[in-house]
Length: 254
Image (tube, rainbow, N blue to C red; front, side, top):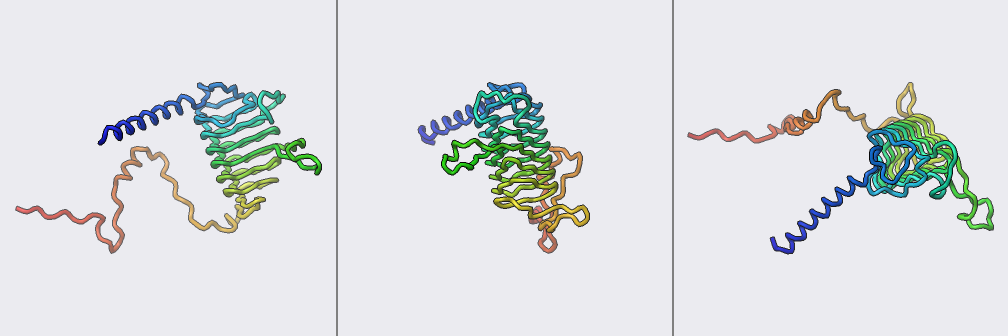
């Protein structure tokens, strides 16, 4: 290897090692809140580094074991350093996942239940522009606000938008790129802009319309990581008519 190429390789390794160190040091947890004074951070919760725009932290509550990816915006209030009075504006339950580049912008409260997964680049807001006066710029008119709730166990696909006043029930699925407003019942799948119900769970008949693929089989309870590694090392059995997975070893010669 030429000296210049070797030097470039060493520099690359050093840079990435330093960046991994910065990512670890810059992550925010309950034990290492950095410059943020959140109302609550539960144990096991981690905000990846670099964080997005974060302000109004005294009015933000983060549950336990939440995963908040890099570049996520958590904004309580219209501007930093406002006194928002009593109560929280952003409340995450336990086990919430916020994908990279997602934004939560709250004047009225945004409440997200336990085990909600939010894909990357989603936008949830309890505040929206108004345009009542046709003679004034939209950006100079006083906005409207209404609380937003996302029920536990729900999943929001990539680039979904949730508007003020939206109320999503339990285990709701929001298709990627959808725009949600109003009320969505439990166990519903919504898609489109504006989002419409495209599938629902019926206690008597199951999913309507039926799912196109069978449900995946979960791993057996109690299986360990070591057992999974051993399973990966076992060759797949041969299919009927295809012979053995490996050719037979040649017979030893004398």
